[in-house]
Amino acid sequence: MICVDTNLLIYAHRRGAPEHGAAQRAIETAAAQPGGWGFAWPSVAEFWAQVTHPRYPGGPSSPSRAAEFLRSLVETGRARIFIAGAGGFGRLLAEAERLGVGGPRIFDLQIALAALNGGATRLWTHDAGFLYVPGLQIEDPLAGGI
Image (cartoon, rainbow, N blue to C red):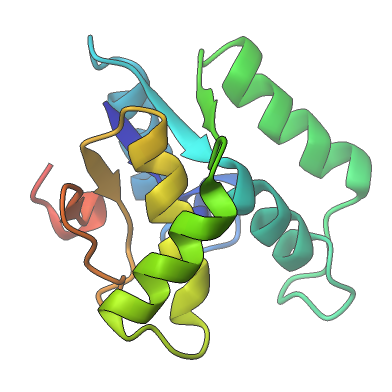
């Protein structure tokens, strides 16, 4: 199962982004996978914070447009929403300590743990520095490897 990272959601949503077409194709490819696909609950908030921000390049999306995009992925694209689940708080803290996570990489860890909890084995992102978490294969579908 594939978990799609926030940056691919943002690029697919924003028509003006240079990565827009490639991100859309990546999401369509993920949605066609027999094992299923989805995105992590923390990515919903991260996506929302970025695309509705008043200073977003190209102007902000309205809350209605942002919600419509995410709903369409779930309703039409059959995306699953991955959550941390019971014990998620303790696991986040333990893994952050074990992996030595500092700064904003804690958000990568949140996404990765939710993906793993939801059964994902692959995470698609265009973030070359996405935090490696054992059990989750990190791939960049925009780099031509997918």
